[in-house]
Image 1 (cartoon, rainbow, N blue to C red):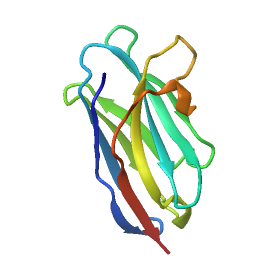
Image 2 (image 1 turned 60 degrees about the vertical axis):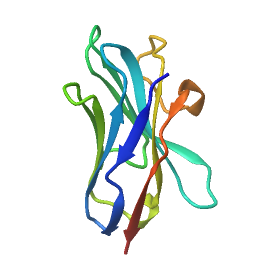
Image 3 (image 1 turned 90 degrees about the vertical axis):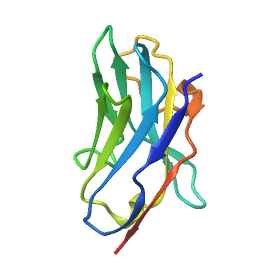
Image 4 (image 1 turned 90 degrees about the horizontal axis):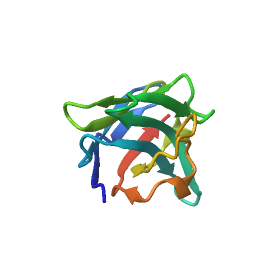
Length: 130
């Protein structure tokens, strides 16, 4: 079981930036970590994911089309933390953002299908005003 704790959410003006953090309890392992979001009245959407691994190396970043070119996922192994840098924020990015972790099955990317992830954080709210 991997414990996850998100932070870094807040309110920002349109075209602003935020960096979300996901502190994980996972150490020396191979894991898929993804960021998801859910806006009021909408379903959960996968935003980005990556592989973190001491054996295979970090990488295999994947982004939803809606955030490609604006969001960047990264990992600091020394801090056991995965980040989501969000630039050029739009009002439609307003949502509760969740960090999730799951086992890597060897695919090219971790993907953002919810069923791949069985450990979830509590979420952090991002509000973008125009």
